[in-house]
Length: 165
Image: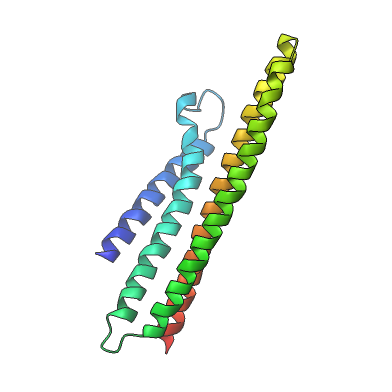
């Protein structure tokens, strides 16, 4: 089952990569596809990264199952996994607290919008608020993805160590 999922991820990634290469090799503007198809190049990059991440996750799950379902399961591994999960929950709480504090600051600055006396100042302030909100969301999303990647690496390292023994 794991191998079938890995094959599916690899096949999808390969198909998107080939489509992106074909788009990049178009010689002139006349040869380029309709502009609505151009996001395929960006989708290729995302799909490639997600495919690698899914492959690592499937390999991790397979190794974890082998380590824990062996005739002599390693209970030390379970304890270390629990510690990793606790650290991840602490990091998530920290990211959430930081984001809420930044949202509070943004809400406080939103009260200054009433002080704008021209349309141009009002528009500047409105867009500054939207940019601030976008920055908060970007920072929180990035932090969560970094945490997820860090957990994958940590779990993978633990499982690989145990399987070598």
